[in-house]
Image (cartoon, rainbow, N blue to C red):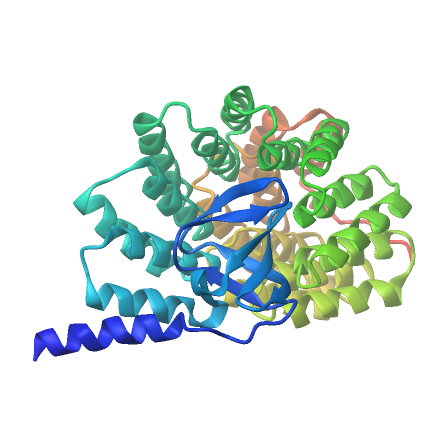
Length: 435
């Protein structure tokens, strides 16, 4: 009976890979390692679990794209994207010990956002024979689950197994940035780029980190390089647009967001970013339209709701803003940003009816807990404002003093002015946005 079920599973796996009718735009998953066929011979290899996009179909062959490279594959090497996990699950039933299929399923699970599934497959692979690729993949899943300490542990193990892996260094750098350990992040990015000076994604990650540090010119320079090396990297345009927004150049910002969306129409972050740029430039209706579109393309994205909430806040629609921040928290309770947004609104809103010192302290404390009380001046600035609104000025002074010490140069004066207010027994009120 068992043997019969294994045979059935093998036949099922094979049947999924049977000839399919593909058309341009279809997404497929590689099920057998192969090399792309290009004009000058063999192109790069594609591995089981990799996702590709069909560009053209000729008989039993399809032209597919892999990042910036296009090449031809036999149809028998791929299955439709939505059948990929079923294919590898069936293959594993037929042969549970075949690590190649488990790794491919783990890769595909991560692609579709099943981080717990990825971790489960990686746990099994590590149990039977760990390697740097598996640690990297599991680390990426932990990172997406907002567990940077576990991610850093896995990336460090990957580096221990392969000291020349630029991917592991770049990924660990991103995890350090998630913990607000920016100097460690930049050190890892530098090492990754030493190992691979043409690593577009690492320039992208380093650009993000410079942006978090408010070093917008450095961010733009790194994102320029990422785009030069990988012109279809939607996220690089998105974050360069955010840097331009911070510098007040909304025309360049909108232009970058336009390209990000053209490359990836489902890039919710780019819609949110463009909405903020529209709002800063006074285009209020366009701003909300983009905030709505971000939520339409990613209805379960806490970041999308947080982005629209900030647009509502700038338009003085505080009830709508609070509702969006609360929805973001409900959707993703471990995502710290909306706790910061809601705490700041409850603590500093210019309209009294929206302020609530107790709720502000609760949200700001949760923010710091999620960040594991890391040395982030912005978080402590929010916590201090919340305590001030609650009338606990001794605690407000304590946390604002820490915020001032940790503040980067371009916000230090603002932080100091709030500290002076709290010492005088006065809460901070956010100036009403200009209409």
